[in-house]
Amino acid sequence: MLDCGSKASGFAVYQCLSCGKGHYKVHFSCKGKVCPQCGKRYARESMIKIATRMFPGVHYRQVVLTLPSQLRPFFYNHPDQGKLYSQFMSLAQDCLEELIQNKFNSKSLKTGCIVFIHTHGRNGSYNPHLHVILAEGGFNEKTAQWRRFSFLSLAPVRLLWQKHLLNFISEQMGSLNGLVDKLWTDYPEGFYVYPGNDKKVPTKSYKGLILYLTKYLASPPIGVSRITS
Image (cartoon, helix red, strand yellow):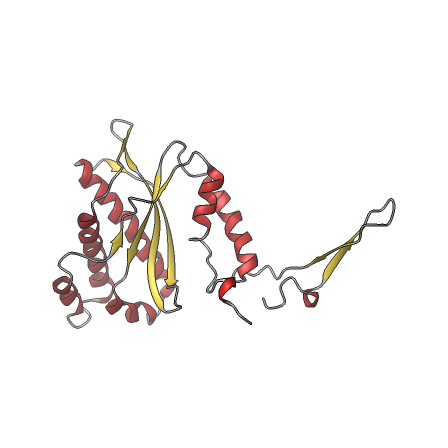
């Protein structure tokens, strides 16, 4: 990764075959997904594929769902993190779909989510949390109608996420020596979430949508601007 784009990785030289002029040297990249430069290209290509699944004319928003610090050691030391993370991400879909069903008082509504997991915070500490691109509405399968909303109240999101997460922890890990019950008591207003009422992402511009989503798919562990040497 450190040699990406340098002479150490090799290069190709191009020139005009007619006149022999115009030498142009292109250094090879490392093509690593964790490389700050190559990772951007990987994310961009992946997001183009994902964007084709977005619903035309539907607005989306970014929702953030967090994991309390008391539960992070159990996630960090889990013997099968891959499976745990997958189930953790599925919780977001279940939670937000129930939220929208409650909002419209209809169990027939289905919504669209794209969920990304970040395992670390900006300071580099272990902090699993979910970034969700949520469709602003739900599809009623019985009436074949799309019901749209433009605002999510914070309190219901917090309490519903707490319910889904703690029920999941209880099923997968047990009571954790009373920790689950303590988290119910210590957080009477639910866990921290961000419903994203001020972060709307219209699908009028797929280019803008792709750029917006890219940073949540393959963010490097540290920004290039923060690397000093």
